[in-house]
Length: 168
Ligand SMILES: Cc1cc2nc3c(=O)[nH]c(=O)nc-3n(C[C@H](O)[C@H](O)[C@H](O)COP(=O)(O)OP(=O)(O)OC[C@H]3O[C@@H](n4cnc5c(N)ncnc54)[C@H](O)[C@@H]3O)c2cc1C
Image 1 (cartoon, rainbow, N blue to C red):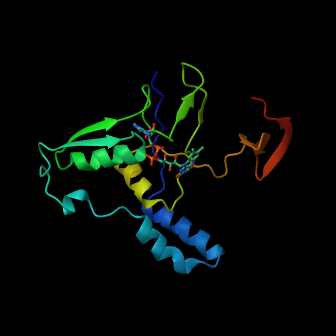
Image 2 (cartoon, rainbow, N blue to C red):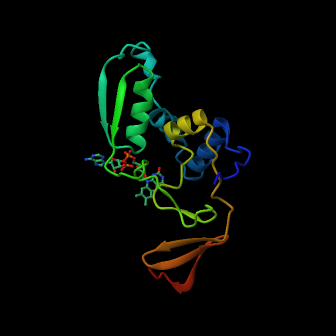
């Protein structure tokens, strides 16, 4: 079943950078801002280093179909390479990015791996924007459950500990 897509309300690059700068200013670290943006940004496009089609006829094997392997494959394909991804899991790709659906209708799901993309992760945002992925804000959304060291926590305005222990 297809999950209905909501309108994209992702922050613009300017909004993300403003959030980052505000957070750094609150921590008296605004001098780190330029370094963070610079060093977490993606390198120049791969076609800056080689011509499209330059790797045509070259076979390249990539071990692992997580974010690293798939983004590497995506970039090398721009140069025309013949890519094979070798993935140990025989039923899914994604590695440590793993959305698990509890029901066939896909109404209930949880992130078993990465869930949050910090505003400073320029390279991740580069691909999010390129592929038009829908992001949801975590801030201000209460009523979430977290399990930390076998204790169930509920997010409200501030995180509060519930008395219900986590049961496997
Ligand atoms: C619980 C959890 C929460 C996280 N939360 C966040 C978060 O909120 N924000 C964030 O930015 N990051 C988060 N991370 C980290 C993020 O998930 C990883 O940094 C990222 O997914 C790593 O991607 P990768 O491609 O480098 O490695 P992986 O995702 O580990 O991919 C490696 C792939 O290689 C395969 N593989 C391994 N060995 C072989 C082999 N010999 N042959 C074939 N295939 C092989 C594996 O099956 C896997 O698919 C979290 C990670 C975990 C586990």
